[in-house]
Image (cartoon, rainbow, N blue to C red; front, top):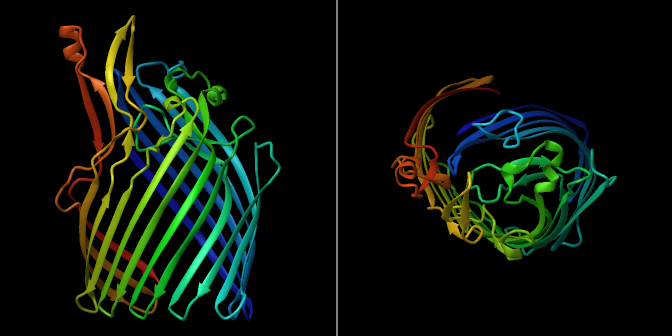
Length: 425
């Protein structure tokens, strides 16, 4: 597996007059992945690249408990995705390539105002337009109501609706840590997300905690059907994509303890995600590949001296769901696989322990220099991030029969690191 990411940006902020602020952002990001895998005796590679340029301008007015925020976002997104059969020519039917450039413009208006001493109303409305989509524009509303019991305790509830023109398309029957990424266009509709949420927050002087619950309805979701390697050209990709619906729900718990020398946080979430496609899993509901019910993160940072601090963190996540292969058959010159129920199996849980120490070498009014030593995955646990089934080729040649084997790709092993940072103040 190969992975690379580049992010850079510049921000300009100006105070135009009392209570009025203008902020402008220019950002650029580049993301590349390539994952190689063996699928029934054939070697494939899935490669994605995404380059995004964003321009954002926001004008904000704040006075007392009231605020108004307005501005625009302009985004240019360039996608390139390829599913490659390493043993075939670049333009053969076993190599599916996709390239697209999309422009998005969004105007937004956010406002917040108190209804009384105890209640506060917030709302937002943005109008967006996306190139290469038949619909001229999309309206995305959101509203939130908060009940301020006192200075430290708040209950809130909200409802929002949004449209997503960039699709993360799952490759049915292949369990990889990346998706096939495509844009919405005249053949592929935009996904729609509606969310209802609520919760409670306590903000004390040193202790803060909150619990949030949410439920999301999703429509216009995309996923490839099982014939991923039989697609021919990029302009036929839509013919191999199914449309479906989904639901996601869960609860998040967060707590933080902050003292002059110690900073401790714990975050636990329980979440479920299901999908339903007429042409997949006999039209029944199934677990989404990223359905991972339990997610736990614990972080503790302690300042030993004014210049030396240490930290330790622990992470635990349920394993991703995947579709198991229950049998293989040789028919003619093709290898056929028999699958179990869609995403009916789950990988082992992901967990690791990290620790680090940092020294403040020098600090002036203009800069700060820091040296750090860290260790990722202290107990060197092998965490699989994707899994797939194939067969033993040597066994097949000798016995003319299949012996199934399971392969997986592990993430970071025991990894020490030394870092030096220079921060300009």
